[in-house]
Length: 138
Image (cartoon, rainbow, N blue to C red; front, top):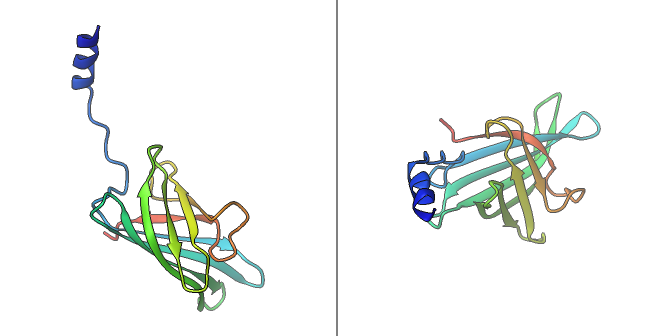
């Protein structure tokens, strides 16, 4: 029985790497509605860290929907990785702010309409919980 299981495992096709792989940089950009003709935005720029994860720079703020002018309200750095279940997540710090966490539950193709949550649900004062797109810049 063990021999049969080993043969089946050996002949099974390898699972494709999840997008993005830990060897490639990626960028996430998302928005959430705000009041007064504005939207809140979050950007994550990640580069491989040689430990199987990423070093992540996080920028959040508000953007005018009429002029496109942005006001940055948070800029932090941290680390990110992928859980066994496939979630992307990490922590970030910035001077004058507590350490925050983020998770991204990758949907469908892993590129468009990815949902991100900062800290805990409802505690998105610094960066907005919302939906955005992820890419490797190519």
